[in-house]
Amino acid sequence: MEALERESHPAAKLYEPGHVCQAIRLHDLGKIAIPDAILRKPGPLSSEETKIMQTHCVAGARTLRNIQIDNQLDSDPVLSLAIDVALYHHERWRGQGYPHGVKGNAIPVIGRIATLIDVYDSLCSARVYKLPFSHEQALETMSEMAPTTFDPELYEIFTGISHSIQASHNKFARLFK
Ligand SMILES: [Fe+2]
Image 1 (cartoon, helix red, strand yellow):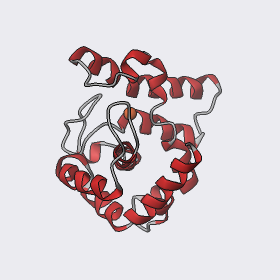
Image 2: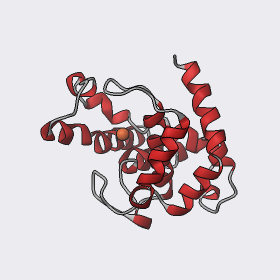
Image 3: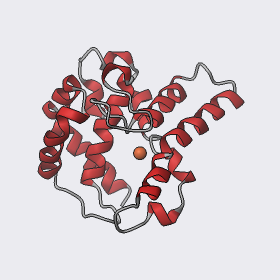
């Protein structure tokens, strides 16, 4: 994450790096509204469970927006970014994502960055239904997903700095063990 922020790509200059870091940490806030039976289910979700799981994007964005309104924090840059991160981190470049199926440049840049980070983190982390992928396995999977899933320019940056991303991921994985 830190490495992605240091890139001199025009998209990276849209945001203050520290704000991006803080906002992306809140991407799955809406999962507090999802029942544990779904969150911790060790197998594939049913279609009904999948629909419930997918509500975490809107739930997170709504919660953050309410915090913003209730505390008169409309000008708070982290909250504004975090609302977009929560809402857009499961949208996909070609439009097959959720909750709204928006695509391409209609997805805010911060949402497209969050997608890359979230996919890498999900692949490299243990889940109740899978073991963590190695860095190399994650990159291979992401290269297969790339044409439909990621902003091509941001994906190219990501692959160019993937070792720094790996180092950051390992550092945080150790911290939260
Ligand atoms: Fe999510």
